[in-house]
Image 1 (cartoon, rainbow, N blue to C red):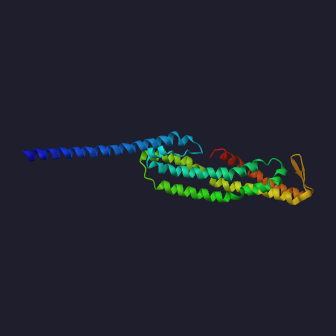
Image 2: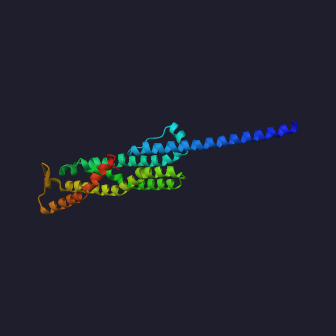
Image 3: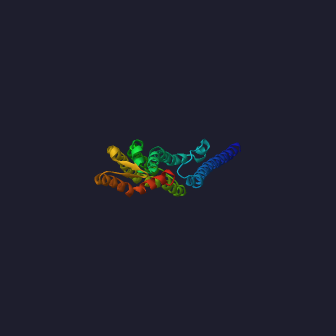
Length: 237
């Protein structure tokens, strides 16, 4: 009789253990679901509305998102590099070019413009490298379909579009700034033979005027580059 009761208790105990395991599995599943929902809500309601400057995650958010915090790090890291390129690389060049309003400005601003534009080619390489790294990291992610759909849209806005704008724009901005510097150098080389009056410039010979007008033509043909760069600097990537 005792042995029978013992067997019944053992079976009951096994059922209780099985129920506990089931509860633990359910709890784990719910936790992942909560992380997934919190992360997708954050992407849709915060990141997509943040513009060019993405917020960093708090420690509480990192815990709430779980492993998805690493997915966000891809977006945030690229965004930080783009912001640095724009603020420290493009903005000084754009400001120098925008400050040129009369011919004499080419002469007086040529040295500061030369210095400001010196790093544009390096920035292009940095953004190319950052884009490749971000693409590689994204390709390695294992995301549920609902997360992937939202994440892909955010990635397009935060990574793909800015890269597609900046990579062709930076070489054009460098070429424009170089032409502006060359114009200043040319005016400097003319010395006292060039005369500035009001908002114009005069040369004693047609040959000098022709060379100057050729530089002006190049600048005019690439004026749209400055507008595009100003838009990028102002957050319109």
